Length: 114
Length: 113
Image (cartoon, rainbow over all chains, first blue to last red; front, side, top):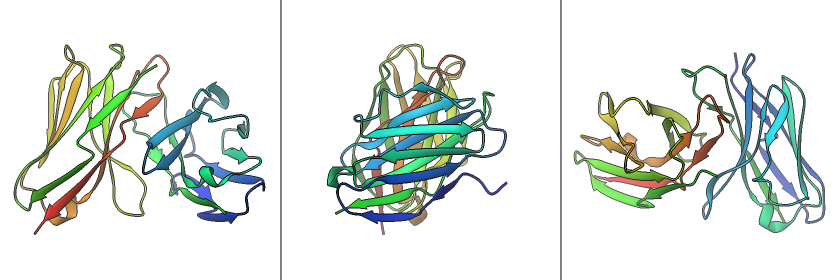
């Protein structure tokens, strides 16, 4: 397996534009997590899914953020409209239900909103 | 919900010395505590983890300790080397309940030559 795959790796967009980040989890993993990383706040959990169902979205900053997982192999995080304060690295991670498996992170998407 | 505090935010140690990073958690139901290392420009990767039924775990130069009563856990790195320079994150999770993983804010470790 190629691991967790995120796209794009880098995104530069203008304030007010819609941004869509994509994630392909490891095949067979039950959980998918979206995190946002900034210097000030570290790794913040935005939302996570179990078997494609959103379980906890309490970390989503505001209504401008939305996430979907239409099937077991694909998830999106959308920001509409984007703002400069959304600039951060967004990570997707996946893990399996069993105790022994770790959460594997994707390479991340570096988002810059100008 | 769970809250994980991590200290210090930055740590500098001489090569060969030991480094200790400390974390506390708020939810006594947390039962799984992973530690991740993130090198510059890379993704976080698991380096060691500990479950709540264990007080200590070692893997070569790294060890983790857990004090459930005090809700503290720590990462110890001995005989530090230049390649240990990175950001380290502690985390807590309640496996078997909600399974979400909450991270501390990270510790930037600098190994000085």
